[in-house]
Each structure stands twice: as structure tokens, then as C-alpha cells.
Image 1 (cartoon, helix red, strand yellow):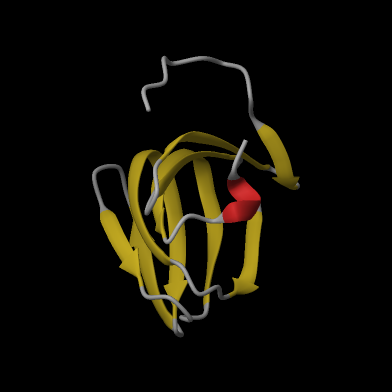
Image 2: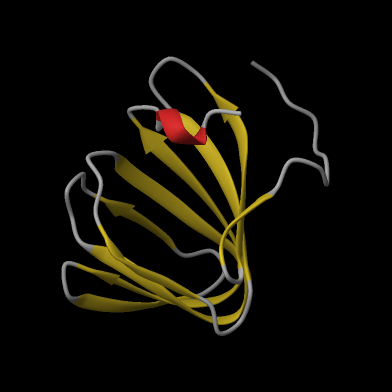
Length: 107
């Protein structure tokens, strides 16, 4: 699968949080998140492993109770089942890969 860059296809999932599935295959799915300063991603978990990279901005990521201040160029991997949340400290762009594919994120 190959996908060209486009401003279309973003969905508002929570106040201040928009996402767009970029590409997906049999085992992985890549999502871009546009995050507005002040937005909160509530504490949650899911069975998918989640690997991310912060393109721009600044967020505070909490994984199983441990807080990490994340700046552009930083990356993370969250094990399936781990409790995590995020506070958006500045307008930010993050790219994350999920494995296995998150069916609810398929376009």
C-alpha cells in the first residue's frame, strides 16, 4: 500500500485530538495525530503494541504511571495492555504504529 500526503481524512476523536490512518498492512497500521495544546488523552489501555514518534510540539506521556516529557525527535513503545495517557503541552504532531492492526482505525 502506498499513500500520498493529503490534508483530507482527519477525524476528530476527542476534543483537540484529530487522527488519520496513513497506511496499513496485514500486521501494522500507521496513524498521524494532530494534537491541540491543552487536550487530554484519558487513561486507557488496549491489546495493541503502540510505537510512536513526536514530529513537532511537546506532550507529557504517562505509561503505567511513569511520566515522560516528550519533545520533537523523541520516540516510545507502549506494550499491549499498558495503561497510558497524554497531556498535550503544545500543538503537536505525532505518528504512531499499532500492531496488530486496530480494526477500528481502518478507513
